[in-house]
Image (tube, rainbow, N blue to C red; front, side, top):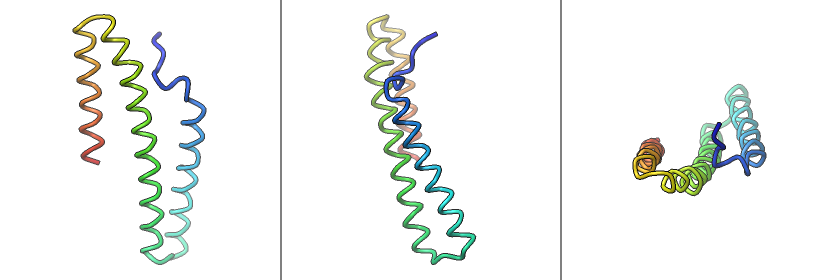
Length: 95
């Protein structure tokens, strides 16, 4: 079984994701309580930025661990991991 590039930072990622989960629950409460829409949008923006930070960290971990390891294995493996990273970047840019 291969080790994920983020394994060394797993606990930090889980803590960040738990905070984001709390933010999203807070946004739901704001909607339930009929909070002013601009205030809700401000919190949505903050949660979005937090998720983007997690995404960028995971992408950096993937490139520095998975892509580098694949490049040391073979050109084909490297090309596959680069393609995966490129597709992930494309998805992030579209979101």
